[in-house]
Length: 190
Image (tube, rainbow, N blue to C red; front, side, top):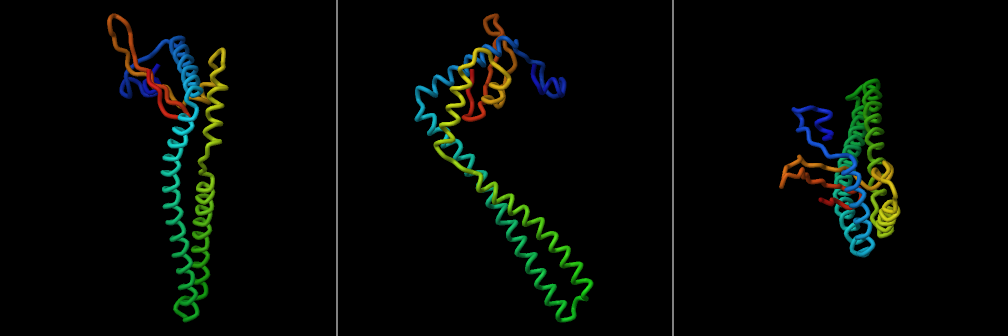
């Protein structure tokens, strides 16, 4: 049954469904067919995986870099504020108590920003793209495709989601589109 309908009722979606045994058979066949295709065109599949991963990596890398730059600028501004406060204290413009409170406040903000910088640097460093990763993904597909019975582990390893359209009656038969979105390489539609 449609998950959106199950959680939100008729105001969220319509009540469309597919027989579980039919879905299991369809998904099993598609996983096996997908694995067979990856074996036939291994080089092209690896290249496609690398391109898809590269595009995703570039987007995340750019977002993280922009955020990192913004955090570094915030830290630089805080450093300037602290230096300015020190100069004001030396010149007698700011009292020692005010100076201590403000410096403590700015140092706490700086420490928080520095943690964010460190986390972003780690995220940027962890974004890697290589052929070995694509080969490992293909090996995973082949290993999972040799199943006798489709298990939840195989399903969750290979498939991100399954989208089932509303049922239509065509030539007195119930027909619906099923879209399988794999975790590693995009969509397959039936």
